[in-house]
Amino acid sequence: MTTIRTQPARVRTDAVTEAVAVAPASGSGSPGVRAGTLRALGAGLAVGAAAYGVTFILVGSQEDGVGRFLIDLTGVAFQLGVFCLLAAMWRTYATGTTRLARTMIVVESVVLGVATIQSLTTLPSLGGEWGTVATVLDPFWPLSMLGMAILGIKVAVAGRWRGALRAWPVVAETWIFVALPSMMLLGPVVGSVVAGAHFLVGYATLGVLLAVRPDLTRR
Image (cartoon, rainbow, N blue to C red; front, top):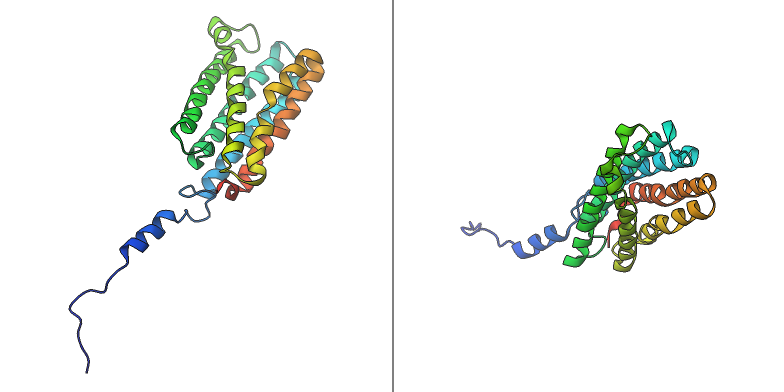
């Protein structure tokens, strides 16, 4: 004899809700972050860093003129690339989940923003003498790089990024400790080559890693 049920079947809403909450986006390197987003951010970093690194190698020793203008211009491209890196760190909680870890990224973004404004104010000089604003804001360039070095260490300690992607921010963000002494001790020509090469080995490679292996951002 066939019976007709008048009550709906029981649904395990708790289990379904939990499964949806923990399931990462399709192809994502980190829960809630699509792989395509991380690939795009990595590509932005790689392109900006490569442009700056190659230009630094070729004309970094020039103190004015076209060479200096190209350095200033590609410097902006590099800084925009670093913003891509910060966005990837923020979206994947690379520095950790605590308020302090999140605040560190915010503070670095502000310092980098001021440094980028400084770079933009140098462009109208066309490689000539900087104006007052550019000169006053110039210290924010090394400060932003120092901040990135601190973040690189934080990413490695937090351990939310894995494999090479966990270690490479430290490699990339030692630029300030390698490049600046090289330019002071080895002279502008050799120092510029070292500085430019470090951008390629460090930041550009980090961008490629993020673009090719976004899955390494998953804890």
